[in-house]
Image 1: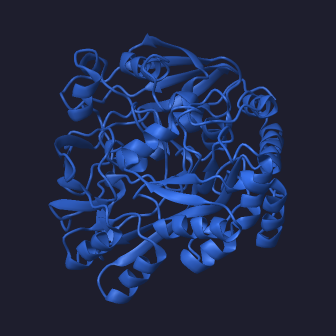
Image 2: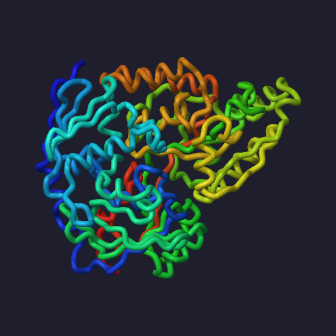
Length: 501
């Protein structure tokens, strides 16, 4: 099927995006506790949750998704496919950056070329490298050209933040990171390293304005402390709480729990080039050793759901019929006995505080129970990211990870984790690469689903990674906070309202 023309009008969305977000009851500052501080406030340099959820409010994206997960206008008011490889965007003419300069099509083109420049080395490069050209036809018209039919383009563009060309070209990357200038609903104000980032409402914002004059994003690594802050009234939203702490919030009489199952998949990552995980029999034994149901029901309180593929039901590309091997520790022991002494080589499980250590410890115990020798290695999130995205030689033997692309499409998780061209990948399987390339090169959704099913079957056959569960996002929130948790886990300040105590 050939898409000759697709025109998305903005009338309904424009109405939704210009209404006031709050009312007279809104408090002066909303305080949000995350696990850690951002690794970067430059939206093209990093995309882990603690970074993304802050800078997402400083910058506008080319397009966005509404609360129902549908594409919606943002900087682009409408878009039209000129051919399978060309798409034209109409750019808003009423947007200014926080320094007062007007946002134009040139800023959009600059942002595209910056994030797709291999020398810039954005961790997001694999999401956008299908774009081979960006041209501004005039101040409000941009045409993007891809190297073939690229069905994931719109999904990926929901993450493309528009940066000001005149600012970025005048300062270093480090300078822009510590003093970012965007066009979003909130402006950067201060960054007290290790403590908090403070944003101030952009009262000149073209769209839906925030309810809160200021927002504080605080780094609070300990989850129990985050909940204590909520219950003492010193924070309004706390992120990354587990089922035990959610139960504590619900029974404590202060605050409430808001949650949703997301596109994020938790998985056990393995470097298939490092012993003993370079032996497919060891990886198969690990697949039998991990009790997904036990983790979900016994540790996570049923908020999550077991999965056997790297795509959750909240994303395009999830398919029926991929069941996994199932939990069978005795079978795991039999396989490892066949492998012999080579299976006893010690290896590390890399983790970071952002992850639920109850799960990591359970995985270690399950592996130990079948005769493997795995030790937990804790590091900070910055070092975790550096190790995990630097290629096979640097990627650790194993790690616990949870992945979300924010795009709700299989390409955004499978391509970076599995394709041999990605810094996140350690697998070199030509058949896998071929299927992943084909899936991002056809606009036929049925064909794409068939290809993603084949990818899931290859991953299952070789146990390149072990998918564990569809993660939930669980927030603790003050009674007055009102917002809808999203499957893509975006936390939009201007979609949060305050109903009072």
